[in-house]
Amino acid sequence: MIEEEGEVVPLLELGSRNNEVDNNKGGFRTLPFIIGTEGLEKMATFGLSPNMTVYLMGQYHMGMTTASNVLFFWSSATNFMPIIWAIIADSFLGQFYAIGFGSIICFVGLVHLWLTTVIPNAKPPPCDESSTHLCSPSIPQFVFLCGSLGLISIGAGGVRSSALAFGANQLRKGNFKKTLCVKDSYFSWYYVSYTFSILIAFTCVIYIQDNLGWSVGFAVPALLMLLAVFVYFSASSWYINPDGKTSFVTNFVKVIVASYRNRHVKLSDKTDVLYHRKNGSSNIPPSRKLRFLNKACVVKDPQWDTTANGIATNSSNLCTVDQVEELKSLLRVIPIWSSGMIMFVNVSQPSFLVLQAASMDRKISFFEFPAASFGLFTVLSVIIWVILYDRVFLPLASKVRGRRVGINSRTRMGFGIFLSFIAMLVTAAVESKRRTVVAANMSAMWLVPQYCLTGFAEASNAIAQNEFYFSELPRSMWCIAATLNGIGLALANLVASFILNCVDVISKEGKRESWISNDIDKGHYDYYYLVLAGLSMANMVYFIVCNSAYGPLKGERNLAEEDDEF
Image (cartoon, rainbow, N blue to C red; front, side):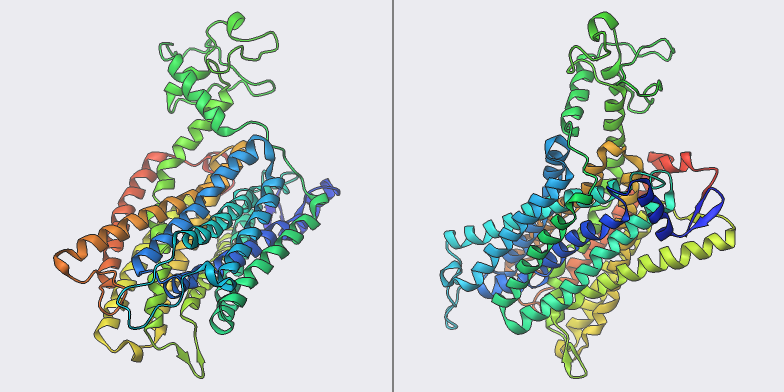
């Protein structure tokens, strides 16, 4: 339910009103196809991730550290590619084609990965059990494997770079732009839809891999991606397709160059200073924050700096106020964005958790729960969190207060970081307990609390991050807003790999067993998780500092009279 000019309007009814604005293009009817495409992509790619550690160690005979590093780099590439696609989409390709081409490339990559299961020479032969060393893959085999993973990353990047922003653009007419609740609900339920897809991946797809073998188990994700291609293009005539115009990266470089070239210009607080603006923009001067960048849009001599039509004669010396403010808005969110990285490091630890679950008693009655499927508890926790927040807490709080209320995005981000810290402590405690008993006699259900805490942390922080970026960045930067979470995940995987290697090297000095041993019973994964908990605690302090320095949110300034934020 949303409040609209004194009346309460259901979300679905508002969707029908938006469709009445433009019956030919856009509207809520397009969202199932867009969200469905990314959902199917998530089913395909996330259906591979949990068991890839087992596949690499069993079929490619990699050690635990090597397999983990491969997966960290693969995940990093998958989460970094959206920024490349966002630049391409914003520059010339457009969001529609970015998603379309990305879907096709991802399908090709999944087919290549499936071929590693059916072509005997695509992977190393089985090792002799009497051999004391692993049968490592040859260079061509390793290149073929990494090539398939690379294609999957490139394709998934095209889908993820634009799906969220493309869906938001379908609602850009009518009340979406000015109604906070519609925006909040869109982001929340978008997140639920793809976490539901991950839920299917962590159950059905993994079950097929465990029981029907790798060839069938890897064929299913390829077929899901093929279905995604058909779903997406089947509604192509309905989409609002904003074309790419100019690259935000190019604009940012221009602002930095122009600021440096005009570094000797004296800025004044007087109102007679002339700033360069694009035609039709408001006559509002640039903000005082990051004031040095304002030099990029100061018109020193109107006759020489601009044409009769108001266009800059040299764009490397003079930018518009809008270009300057776009760069400022991005620079302002960077510190808070970086505070989510350690939380993503904590989330990016599935390899160890699979080994942990595999060593414990996973039987529930007559059914043995797959070790790689315990991640579904994280996904279920995300869905439960969103439902409770969006459908229980917000309506109840609004009814009690007599007006629309909500918890602002930065508060939820901070709470997610705190929950991630608690999750690492619980994970370390459970692993310490597992080491003191016979693991085969310890129920794997002991792992459920840590998975749930991780899910609650991710739901609270990641959804709030999306809302924060889309609220604080202008519409022209929505593609970059949609990719900031992914970039954080990409860098977090690189950081996770660095932490992993440091702990591995330091812990095995003096010929001791590494904390991150191939044999989980000989290692000390509990110590490793305590290291992550310590980093999480330091990250909480860092977030508090960044949050205090940021100042009020744009939404808090614009909606101060009609919303309660607490």
